[in-house]
Length: 93
Length: 345
Image 1 (cartoon, helix red, strand yellow):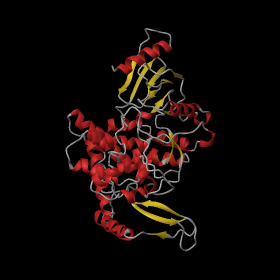
Image 2 (image 1 turned 60 degrees about the vertical axis):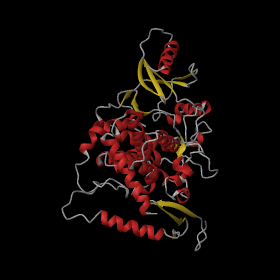
Image 3 (image 1 turned 180 degrees about the vertical axis):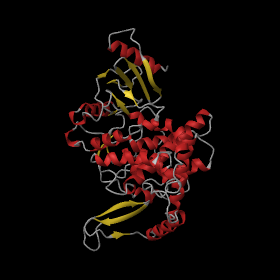
Image 4 (image 1 turned 135 degrees about the horizontal axis):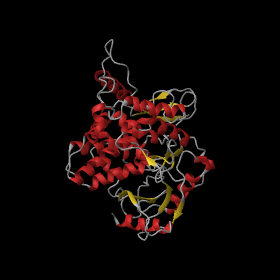
């Protein structure tokens, strides 16, 4: 697909599960029907799921995907209890 | 000991011209049998392994460009009486399974960065496709074949699978075929029960939309099945990557995606994830981009979450046991992926 503005080729990217087309020239973005709504829905879900951290909250965790486990960035130290049963999975296909 | 393991032990003793040499079985699964005899390890590859593809992969592992990254083979060997292809390798110390805290995440990250930087044009060819996506398809086929009761867990895994783009399900967008078939019939994802139809049967309509997701432009040499069992030390400090069965051309982000999936599921500690990703980037690895890695890792990490959860459900059912805590976490991640796919339509 070609960019309607500068006619450079557009590439499809996956942004958090939503397919968007971005122009390789002017970096403009094309959204298909419904994709803006999908992004808006995603944003509202995200803000509901993750309220801003209160002052003095524990340090930030590395980025995780939107479908990541809820403990990311919320309460630290909860990873420890998984680790015992996690060992075998580290070694298998 | 399986019949394959017995045949492999006989073959490796014959190769060493020592009929009484001690042989230890390191692994004996339907898809891989590995025995050790002194300094040498013999591996029987999965049934249906393409001899030409295996020869190219062996050539890659032996190539000077991969020295210090992939363990080089000792030699080839004649196939076993049952037809299984056999390769010989130097023995190396594996990662201690009872000490996951001592796992070499830093070394894993930098080895992958160096693997991804190998100039593909200088390697033997034609380089087969990296085997990751076909593995996801086989895991789903195994889950379907297990014919489990229709639970929320099974449904979520199948929906999360249906939401993946075709390339990540082993379906080639160009011709609509998949490359997961094995000549021995171990594969069940043929067109009849196949991936495209299954999407609709699962009650979702993401398939057409998801298939539009373009194959990533990034192509490079990939391991295809990274986990901690794929790292060994032939000498005290020098780690190498082993297991070439899924080695090939593909999106290098796939090799980062299993630790990424563990981290996203809350299993891998944030500091381990950061060590792995940091070492990968410090060694010049580019598959995760320079900042937020998730735009690149999202699809492969979802695929590996689906693969792990599907195998966990199938294996637990076959053994008549409940899921353990780690398996449960991967199924929960699949449930969140399925919910997420619904939210984004």
